[in-house]
Structure formats: C-alpha cells, structure tokens
Image 1 (cartoon, one colour):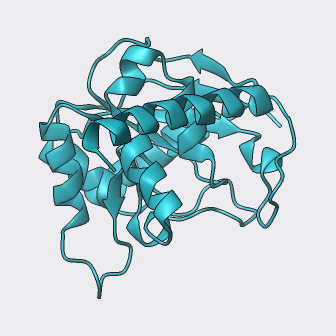
Image 2: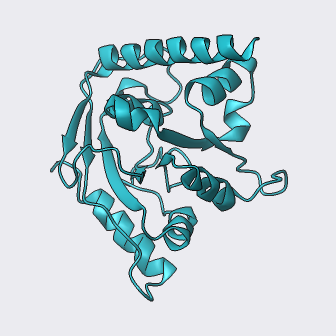
Image 3: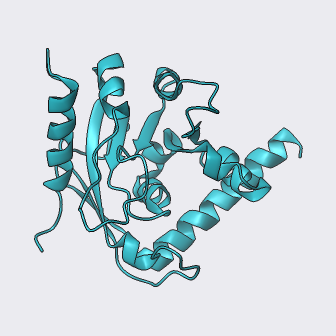
Length: 213
C-alpha cells in the first residue's frame, strides 16, 4: 500500500474504532488529579479487557490522543495482517515482545525511545490481562525503570471501570455499558526510593481511584 494511503486508511480506521468505542461504552473521563493538557505523560492503568488501551486512547482529548502511543504485545498484534495494520498504522503502538527468548529489543529501551521522540505512553504495568478476583495483579518492573530513566515525565494512574463487563473474556459481541476512566495525580520516583517501594506506591495510587463497592 502507498505510504500516504496507509496513513489515510489508518486515520479513517482510528476514527471508526473510537466512534464505535464511544457508542458502546459512552466513556466518562474523570480528571480527578490532573488536567487534560498536552504534557508528556505515561498513563498507567488496570488491565481487565482487551479493549482497555482502545478506550483510554479514545477518551483522551484530540491533542493528547495524537501524541499518545499504547504499549502493546507484539506477539498479539502481529499475528494477522489486520491486527498488524491496526497496531502499527492506527495506534502507532510501541510493540513489545513478551517472549524473553524471542525478543531482539529491550522493552524498556523501546519505551524510553518513544518518550525521547516526544510521545506519551499508555502502559499496563500488570503485564497481562487480569482475569483473577484480585483488583490488580503484581506490577512488573517496567514502570519503575521508566520512572528512573525519565524522572521528569508524569506517571498518571488511570482506573478503568466496567470495560471487562462490556467485553468479557471469550466473548465476541460487546455489551453496551457505560464505562468510567478516572485519572489520578501524577507520580514520580522519589530520591533513593527502591523498586519495591515505588511499585507498591504506584499500585496503591491506582487502587485509590476505584469507586467504592
């Protein structure tokens, strides 16, 4: 496909996906701890549905959406030409290979490179979709390494509510349901803060955004 045509097709497809996501979920963004301004950020969220990054990306205002790239699994998004097109051309995702034995690039280096290019990121620190009864799985270390490598970048917790009920695991047809995304106050790595302490603080910051049961 001609490069200009791929760009056009990617924009049209992105508009179609975001329109469909809005129609199905009527997403409501609550900017509880930060304003929706075009500053460079890493949005880190809970991960309970394959549609999480699509909804988060869709909910961002246009100036933020244009500069924000999701961090996604290469071994999922390159399994078919359609997925590869959506991952690369529509979302411009930072594609991370979750298979240590197969990867040729360091995932943290890939994310840092994207930040250095001026992008914001959408990251799911649990590392995989959470299908357990626990509200969150233990965080992987990537968020800590990003905070350490680029301490000036805001790390913004985002709690996504109800999306796992819109698209339950194993289902093909989504169920219309209002979803809420709550954006919290930004975090930064404290001087001499350990990895364990930082990841626990990030976990608690995300859990604090949940609506009371």
